[in-house]
Length: 307
Image: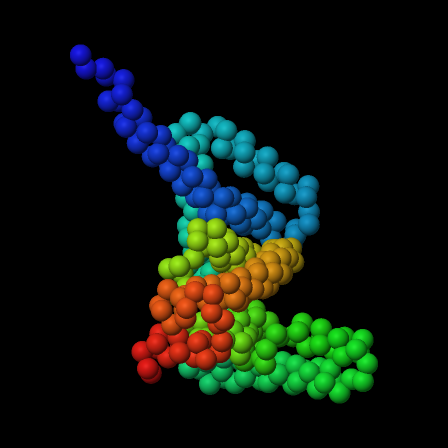
């Protein structure tokens, strides 16, 4: 005799999976697009009501908001739903635009615009990089010339606050990421760009999750900072939006600095922990044998395919 219960179990699990997937998608959609978009749209509405002439006149805001809500309340329910839908749509569109601009924010933070084709942009980036390098070398020389340990460490900390390696980018975040490559190359003759795909294949799930979380934190910080562009545009019509834009940008930038530092540290740590395992997997090293710069050089040569 066939029993219907067990046969229905797979369908139940599939439905539960898709329900959970839909719930997580809705949460992501609301938290990343709709909620910050609603705040931006609300600010735009306030800007439209007050403008520069009544920028901080809250009585005028309450009067106009009351008139607007009363007029909406007299509309049919379908019209009210359309207004709500329009607000949600505007919030979502704003969120999508900001997500599209987030890559530009990351490029700005990483300082890759120093390699821009535009001569004046490249020149500005090079001036900033050179200034960072002069400050870094001054602190490094002072640390090397110090006669007591306290002074040596003080200047070393000052140097490291600028960059952990010789500055090659015009920004702190760009140099922190670049320093990870420089430091592991100095230690192991490793080239992170060619090593990373191979290292990723042998990482355990916990290590991958930590790296993904750090990268996601950086992406989220850049996305948050990019919302400042919307408030900056609103500031053209309502000046109180300008300090809001500044706060949003600075908060996102500070979070981005922390996330970049964490991500770069994890990249270095990944090479520290898994370099020997990678060499063993590729039979460039025996189990238990010490990993040396010579081994790292051989691996880099192999990964670069001799180029």
